[in-house]
Length: 99
Image (cartoon, rainbow, N blue to C red):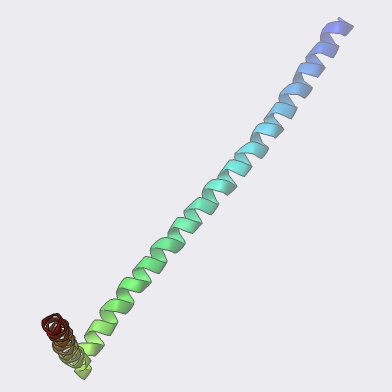
């Protein structure tokens, strides 16, 4: 009878230890999952913030006329670039003619 009681106490003790270990591991798993969730939420917030900033800049650019200025600047830069390429091609052709 004493032996059965000791074995029962030991089994209960082992079960309690296993339960504590499981709860501790469960807590660690929950912490890890929570960290991942928080990180993902941070990424989502950053992406949304970027999109809203871009949209606001676009609206402000239209209101202030900055968008039009940018488009003009792009066209001018394209024309200047094309002229530079044409000039370089002309110089290269003139060099070939000299030889």
